[in-house]
Image (cartoon, rainbow, N blue to C red; front, side):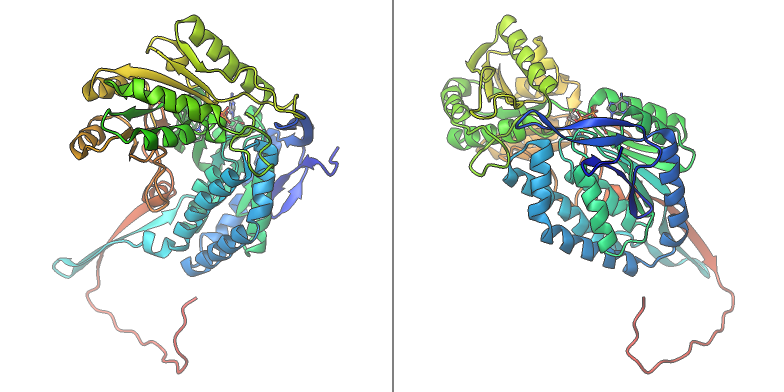
Amino acid sequence: MTTTNTIQHWINGAATPGASTRTAPVWNPATGAEQAAVLMAEAGDVDTAVAAAAKAFESWSESSLTQRTRVMFRLRELLVEHEDELAGIIAAEHGKVIDDARGEIVRGREVVEYACGIISALKGGYSDQISTGIDTFDFRQPLGVVAGITPFNFPIMVPLWMHPIAIACGNTFVLKPSERDPSAASFVAGLYKQAGLPDGVFNVVHGDKVAVDALLDHPGIEAVSFVGSTPIARYVHERATAAGKRVQALGGAKNHAVVLPDADLEYAADHLTAAAFGSAGQRCMAISAAVAVGDAADALLPVLAEKAAAIRVGPGQDVGNDMGPVITAQARDRVASYVASGVEQGAVAVVDGRDLKVEGHEDGFFVGPTLLDRVTTEMDVYTDEVFGPLLVVVRAADLDEAIELINANPYGNGTAIFTSDGEAARRFQRGVHVGMIGVNVPIPVPMSHYSFGGWKDSLFGDYHVHGPEGVHFYTRAKVVTSRWPHVSRSVEAAFNFPTHG
Ligand code: NAD
């Protein structure tokens, strides 16, 4: 059953079909054709991967930080060397445009760069003579085998939020990537091998709910990182915590951008357009709701409409396109039905992308940029995460009303404000119940030295991902209190310049 275009698991340093008997189609969203099949792991495949990871943990957790960072430095170089190939894989399976695929590779690579500095990140504290004759210090140790379960929309970046940090901290990893665009994960597994990572430290099991449930319940897994939609994030958090695991589960979003009347409207419209329609709106940090304050709406709408209508939509692999298709035919139809319901409930379709046809790609999963005005907070198109190229415009009388509106929303992933008023920006950043805030920055994804995470229904668990919170998530602390009444020992001298491996 394993033909060349059947994507296999990666366990213990090699591609393997395992015991899987089921497959799922991997579509080319730009053509609508099935381009590959991916194996769907059974619980037994998860067992095999966890056993390989558990075995590898014995030695990997004892490897020095220097040895681990050397692997990360090499991985970083390989990600640079293979950027074209990887961007091609992402564009082919996800559908996003090549430059956008490069963008996610770069942002994911930055996490590897952070992991290259794990020696600094893991430094503990030391208090000499904290009590008479007593010193205290703390240090952190890896958890064991940890799992990552990731969504389709960033097939390389989101897994890279997790595994470089986990592995640099001394854990071993089992990744269950999205079954819709699985190849990037398998490709990265090959790069790790080239980088010198020992077999079994990084494993990939492809699959669906069967594989996910097996990971959530598995007694050999210490922690689960999840990124995906809110209902599944909630489920993963409940089930894996019930099984005694540490869990961070990042969910969906409805990200608002507030535009104050004093903003540079041309700048705001440019950035809103890119943030709403880039990657066909399939970003957890996409701006899906613009909140026009006061008389900003009347000036903003025509500029937004013009820019949305000018977006070049087509296959992601064709240079020159701004926006590709959505991930599946179902996703396309779902976006169209939300637009229909919005119009039915009273919204005004200023730009309507439902009938878009891309010449030569009539069977592709395309839906054009859509702009709905006069949207209210009761409409389904406002309350639900649509996850497509749809920007809704709601109106607020003043900044306080805009902040209230954002805080009443169950999601709290990202938000932005466009203004030239520093005081208003400060009031906004302090007042919104949202984890990541942009001031004249539409997609405020923190750089890798900070941690990424939302509030409310956008994150279940206590830790954000990557950066310092990622290091804490994948390690446990110990505090040592020591007293040495008398010690004498000799250390051999060496003539060579000392090297510590
Ligand atoms: P999804 O929730 O459908 O899938 C995510 C993962 O869960 C996949 O690996 C999938 O195989 C698995 N899964 C799906 N259904 C399951 C089930 N019933 N039981 C167990 N596992 C299941 O999400 P998606 O459609 O792949 O990705 C889009 C969603 O992810 C959006 O909601 C988006 O906002 C969210 N997202 C959030 C962030 C963030 O940082 N908060 C980042 C990226 C994406």
